[in-house]
Image 1 (cartoon, rainbow, N blue to C red):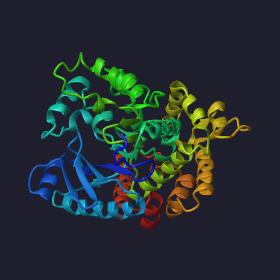
Image 2 (image 1 turned 180 degrees about the vertical axis):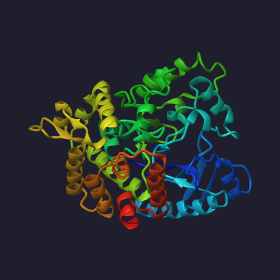
Image 3 (image 1 turned 90 degrees about the vertical axis):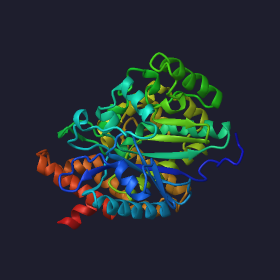
Image 4 (image 1 turned 60 degrees about the horizontal axis):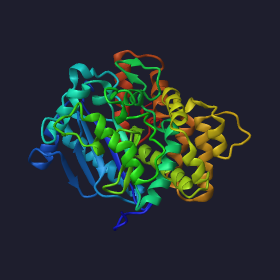
Length: 420
């Protein structure tokens, strides 16, 4: 497996998904194919501008921004993404449209407003739609950040997969940005993930419990995940259109074909700077784990999927306010005398460990991370900005601020301070 593969933490792949919305109304605008055609001169599912690539998604009002190749320089990527967003907004202006951030559109009706990508790969999307009915919020109204992390061999895969499983349950305490759907407060800090864990119930093995099973070699992964997916999907897909490697929908998926694990549970933020600050904190926390500075590999591998999934479900409900009372989980982090702490307090503890071990690693992102810890997730900041007023005009005002945040690459509080 090691032929010229990247080793742990040598480089990263980051993907960010955004909504295309009308400039005046902020309603979704399903024109991703037209926009890509205007840039490429022909219908295409992606177009590359140097270090940044834009590509389509299942829903025609969603477009993805990603680094064209793995990079080890997330600071430069933040600059590249900022410029790319501004270029895309310029291209969208001719359609009277713009990009909107956050993980869920606050008033889109997916039953009536969903338009699927109709071009290449349309057969795959149509098969998905036939099996799962891809018009719900969990299919057509969700935008996320994906982090791709490399591994060169089985030993590195085992370490990385164990570390990711350990941290997955508390990642939404940093990234939750989907509290509003259908014009209502959902009661969830991360409603996108609530839909994510349920939207493939027709074939439960595809998502499992979102937290992956404790498998730490390629052969184990093949037997316990890919082979089970292939068996269970067959009754729904006699033609064999859908591949197990693409159907795997756990919160982190292994891609042995390219030597990477892709983390998929992070809500997209209001600007690339915020996304990459979160990515940097998560990446260095995972590095601590793979190098066994936070806990041993054996401790990481012992975590039961059910226990991790219970914690995960709690965090998607309550976000950073989640009270972690799993003594075994806290003890594994070295918090032997602590019986409970909030998810934010645990992340602050982890960050202190990162700062001690890698003193300069997070210095570039210090103000963004401090804002997250002090002011809360984007879900919290959106809810605070709304002040319990969910009238359409107020929703539109706050989400218009988010669009401004994206264009200027500023976090929500800074934008609001500048606006007033």
